[in-house]
Image (cartoon, rainbow, N blue to C red; front, side, top):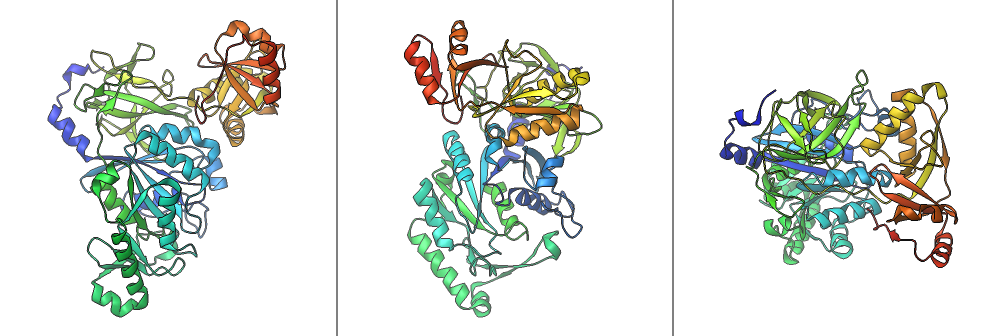
Length: 536
């Protein structure tokens, strides 16, 4: 193994490499085109030669970020995916997140690992419920947001109306850098507000390759586009007069958002977005540890695990822990310490991830996402570090579950595989695993934010562990934290049930608020705490 003290990267090297990194996530409501945009960004960076389709058609392959069989079949993102690629002198770490509300917990973890986000809006629908929830997470974490208004090639709402909605509903000042020429559904191109030129796009077959573009000066644009061009210029001037000019500081402090218009499926406006991210998106900054102390970028290596995934390689059911590098230089083979357990972890097998594709990674810097293979001892929220003093970053909270189901194996002869699969799903956070003495280890309880998590968990137990299961829903709708397990029997005997989560938290479940109220009236001494909305 390699000892940490043989690494030769200087503090200046670390800072220079960190300055090249751009680490961001794409957030949106389902069906806004998030995976399609991710694919288009990779296409424009020339790391793939042809863009795939979320719903396969005309012989086009699937998108690289949706690699699970259920994702391919349903055309939705079920799990987050990491893609790293070079673009010019920058190194891009792009994290595609699940859009469906049932997988909010996975998205929340990803947002803890990025420096900025692209908020994708459907031109016909604007701000939708899941987008609002994810934006609230970004606002809470102070993450700067770039807004990309997608599907302008289809009928949709008025551009000014969409910008007004950003102000009215989330208090975010829009700062459009491009403005559409032509209504939604009649997309001619965009006005580049930085230099006043017209960018006209050319369609390619099915949008599978990079769209051609032509840049015209304002006089040529007016001559060719007439009233549509003049209207775009007038609307852009109106935006400037109402405070819509770009202000870098307002973007970085997350009080305003650059806005771009385009069509991800046709690759219109995608290059603009990629160039903007490289130019303006924040670079990695010192991250606060558990005690609020900022960890300098050039301090010894540290990272935190934000995702654990199994089954990416069907031929090897290995476990990959995704970690965001926070400081120092990582080199494959170094021995790091897991701050949670205090035990060493050897980084012999480390990979750079591009969707499901993986290649050996030798070096990484602040902002990079690394995939630690065969990391069965690592859990979401773990901190890894080298050298003294020890460092530990804040953990990632679990979401408050709202759905519960008992899971039972259909083939008792595969109980070993069943137990292994349950342990794996719990370590990844696919579902929360709850247990109780009265149910026993053979009938654990799945707890989830959304019911689709149950479907994913059951599918994976069958497909990966060959252990088909039956799920029996439990009638609980109210959950509280029981802070003293000595009162467990009181809850169990009064229309409730106490289950213990894998992290040791005791959760008291009730059928409804009436059952909870009865317990409180009869036994006010039982210490029950509400779970915080969104997370616990």
